[in-house]
Image (cartoon, rainbow, N blue to C red; front, side, top):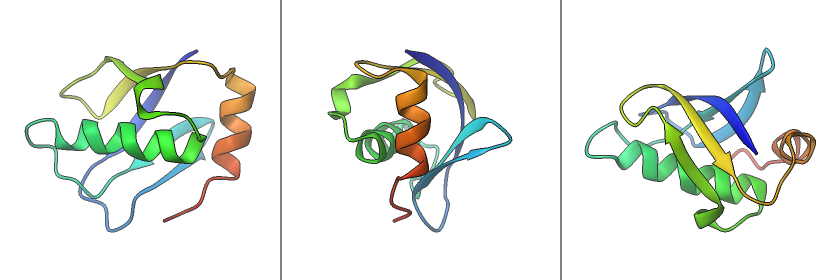
Length: 88
């Protein structure tokens, strides 16, 4: 399954939430040398309960707006799991 997300680097707290039907991922890492992308994959994997390798960056390596692929989950499953995701 692929979807569009918005990443917010240098946040005070790592979390995942839907805002106006768009998935937003807040990470504490800065957008330097791929650190925010690595953190985004880790935060999403934890929130979705999947291995980190199942979260792949498809497009947007240096942009806030990214396209990701999540292996093994449907869009409905992702939405349900993000709604239940821990906030820290």
